[in-house]
Length: 245
Length: 245
Image 1 (cartoon, rainbow over the protein chains, first blue to last red):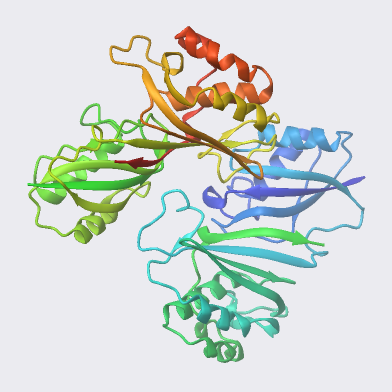
Image 2 (cartoon, one colour):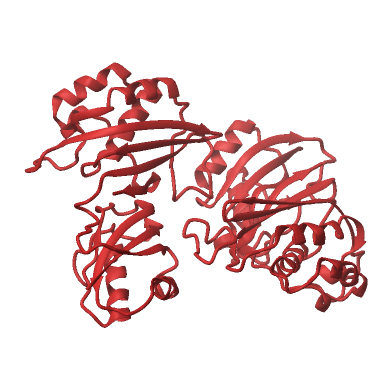
């Protein structure tokens, strides 16, 4: 049996996130599985590298599925892009080894959060960014971010109150770039908890506004309590950029 | 009486273009006039630098209107951006001289056409570009564009069959830039006829595909016949960038 690895981009605006919940919901996984079943005539289950929340976008989500189809990679790509809705696109199709699993084999994930930092909204990126009208102190945000690097228990930055599994994760880098009115926060790490990137961003935005000091980050980590951290930044600004294996 | 000059950006996707046609239509001018009447309590007529077609976007449309309001420029800006729909935004408000007219005083207009040049669509710019799957020969397009520079009768590039007024215009520059899969065509000139930028672009795309030779441009200009030129490129890729006075 073949194990097909897909790289997928989507505009998450219209969807209730990645994960299928039932057969009538509006999810990315659901749309892909429906189409693959039609394409192959088989019962297909697709595994994503992880869930993305409702409204979150992807430039490079990865997913895999098993099939006996005889279609070439090019045929799969063009069939899928012909029939997928306009806001989901398959960027790449590869044959992976039989042991490859999109979620279990993740080495590194890259997320990017887009802030539109201006009192005047931007009509073209309004669905793909979060507007912050107040000026942001990038240096303070970078200083705050530096305390987050490395291996920590990120329970304070997790939306789920009771996690049975470990909430320890390793953040490799957080890069903050300003390009005109746009500020991009790029997070690389071995994995991220539920809502973690959005809560990290909400907390760094508070630091940028001067509502919180960079030096508070270690205390927030130690608290292991969601209420110690800042608000969850809106889904619209978040992109799953890349998944490395 | 004050003469207020507005600089406006809009996502044209949802609108039937700039120009108000009746009181119930869905146009940029209509939305702005409705709001300004509510804001000032006066009967307001707004003059744009020119019409944009349905689906065409603007990064810097300019419009002016006369009013007796005592509001400051900052108050007008924030009132308008609070109540305008999310896909229209006022970037700047200035007091202009009483003689200033957005359309009659135009010195130069800049339009930008966005091509997504890849067999794989882009979900994030699908409403703000036109996809061309075939490879495009940029050098040939530049050569074709060079024949369009200067003062010519552009009747072949005008969608209206019978123009009572002159169809002579001056194109100052056409810049073609490739940034990854995106190709940007930037047109600067003293004025453009109805659909002219879209027909120029449709013709340059044919040249880029090799369906037409760059050397055909002089013959197309001489023909003074719409049928001699290429197709009208889709509205979604076109942006009114800037208007200079």
